[in-house]
Length: 129
Image (cartoon, rainbow, N blue to C red; front, side, top):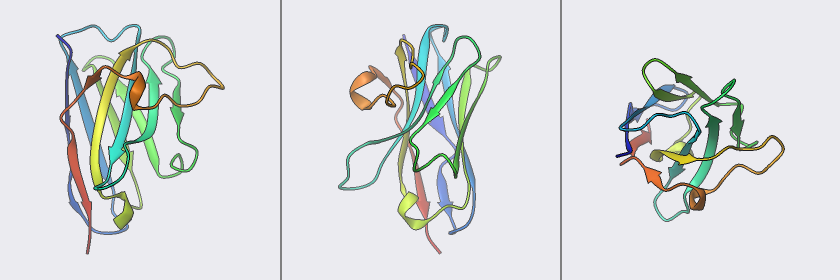
C-alpha cells in the first residue's frame, strides 16, 4: 500500500526558509514520479515540481517557482524534499506530495493533480510576521 507522509511545515516569518519532507513507504519508488503541490484556501491545487525517481532523478518545476523552490531526494531513505527560500505570505498553503507510476518527459508540461493517484495528507505552511 502506497503511503506518503509530509512533514516540516509550520509558521515562518517572511524571508525565511523551510524544508518539507515526503516520506514514502509501502512501495518501491522505481518507476514512479514524485510530485510536490500546494493548495491555498479558496484556490486550486498548484503543481510545484516533479521528479522521475528512476535514472538520474531529473526534476521539473513550474517556471514561476523554480527560483525559490528546490526539490531533492534521498534514495536510501525513499524520501523527497522541498526546500523553499525567501518565503512570502502568498506561499501560505497546504503542501502535498504525490506519487504515480510513470515518467515525466523532458519538454512536457508538469503533470497536474489529475495525474497522481497517491497523495499524502499534507503539511501546513503559514508565512506571517
